[in-house]
Length: 347
Image (cartoon, rainbow, N blue to C red):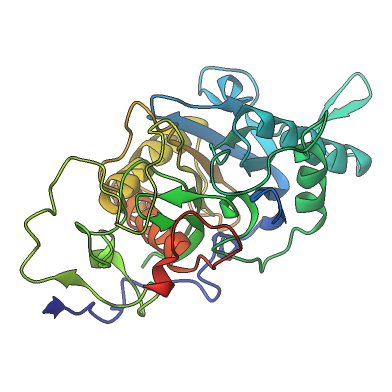
């Protein structure tokens, strides 16, 4: 027996695409190599955008994150990159930089345009793909391709940075969701889900993120009733059909974005709040072997500066929207040759 997901209320309304690009001023592009089972996702900002980051996982891999701290000089960025490939994937930001530099986009210094492109990577080296790519990894070129394909509509599931992602017992993937708050502010989330933990309750198919689901966007199963005995089991569970994975082979990386007018410090608080979305959608989250990280973007396109009370709602929306994006990434994964884990939709 299950408790079905409730319908969308007036205060729980996604944007027209239910993607992070419902936040005005953002475009997203994906590029992947199905033979290697890896890929890159680039978020391009139409104009320099306020940004921050919060890292809570114990094994992060990132580039240009120190400059995002509120006390540091650079206030805005031009793009964010999420990539597979572990440390090799950090090359992907160079490809996005090259794309932006060709278009004279970036921080201007002494007559030069220097694109500011923070990035984060996940571990997808053990997923059935052929990683014998030769002398140089493919990520710089994949980064350029992702930037070149950036648009308001883009693929989810086994696309971009989610192309080779895995979670406990299922294929992971690239997920996105959006939410329009009652005051007109839009929230959007984008995440590559590759967690140590499980996104479903126990060994079943009900998503932990079920209370936040809108319009049956990840199956509409709600929560199981009663909850299974293993729902709170701290052991990392793998289904009989799945091989044992090394525990360090993980990381969930994402971006939370809004069209509100925020300071860099407020964007930092938004990134912190969005991590509650990981905790609501993944059990356990933020382990020593996850590099869990969330970037925050505030485009300011709405022109709305939230009050203190409205900022509380904004933070709550960041968590719920991120939780939905996590579930959607797994829900939309598609099968490929040599997969180690099944897709949720194949269950």
